[in-house]
Image (tube, rainbow, N blue to C red; front, side, top):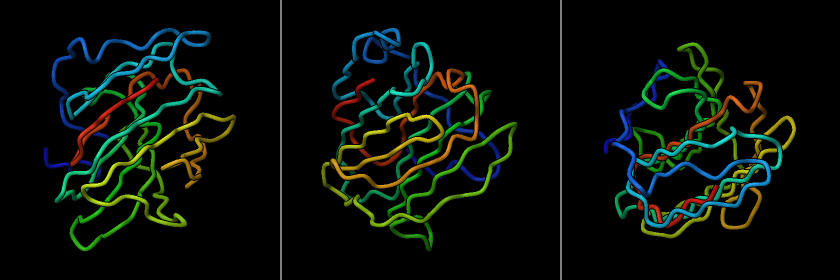
Length: 179
């Protein structure tokens, strides 16, 4: 997959049909964590009950040797282009003249908000394993990579339980996704 799809509107590529590997996560709150091993990319799964404070998403994978970018989207509504993107986490290793930047944004009603690009470091390396944890807190998402706090992204869309789909695409191999 190319990965160069997030430019002026809130569109994203159609996803493959859901298989048993993309079954809905268990209910929240109080539901058990669902672990999905070695899912295909692009990967899409519903987030049962939506996102609420305290909810955590764990993503483990390996960047492809010639990786250019990968993206994690938390989407409100359908994953086929009809919903808003509440949180867009776009890791750009080699995209045009951009290198080693993590772009965060949201897209509401077809328009992108202000990009956030500053991060204290860039922990992603082609052909190397990574672990991402996205923790929902009141007012923000907290993102850790390889067990180290990396950055925060303030909620731009509410209520949070509207966020009901996780999408991951780009130049990577997923080893595990936990909701």
